[in-house]
Image 1 (cartoon, rainbow, N blue to C red):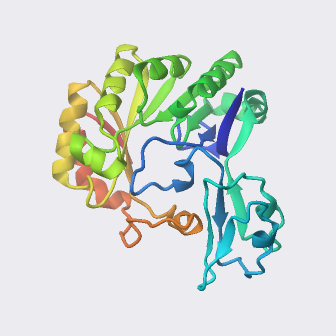
Image 2 (cartoon, rainbow, N blue to C red):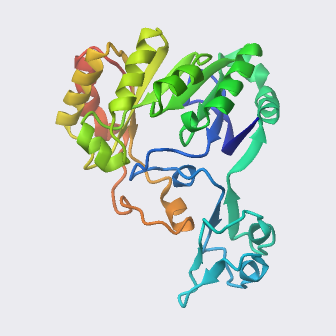
Length: 298
């Protein structure tokens, strides 16, 4: 069994308790306009072009067997992803490292071998394995196999998810997850569709189901300017989550860590000129949740 992975991050301390290894799955059914990992959205392997490293030698253009790579009159790189066979000849032979690929199929055994290298750190800190994305639920069999293997090796397991999948897929995937880091992007159905591309009905149904299983759940709310960052938004989030008997919330201030990736993917970025938020900007926002009995972490 293979999983399409775009990153494995070691020594993470923000994705569950203790020191953790986070495995990032490629592919996501949501298209959040502020996404900091736009390279995670498509399931197929993609090319990243760093214009600052490119000398326009056109080696990639000459090597592409599909003749799919082009430079326009402004010397901007382009290719059609649907025609790309991901042979990686262009990236492998770029003399200045301007091209790279994102996305790699790895076996469950090879991923677990890498995860288990740091088992002493997990044992010492109470950490373990976290699966993230993209959206893990788009590769449910691989995700379930990784979580099962982690439990067989006595590791704590966490799953970061948007919850957007059928109930059957959701149920089968989370069986061996000790902790769910559950993203809620918006409380309003129509606005959720506007900003993420999907309605939140399925998400809330799966969240309610997970609660019936008495899973440990931490809700993660990305706080995004002009989307859900008003005090009135915090009030409505509080009402929704209180009705579901949720207690623990992480607030994730908007940042610009992913901006360069949009340039490398040659994609427009809706939040290019939006100022970042910091913890101090969310003091009053967090108070709304605290006053309603939630445990809030920024």
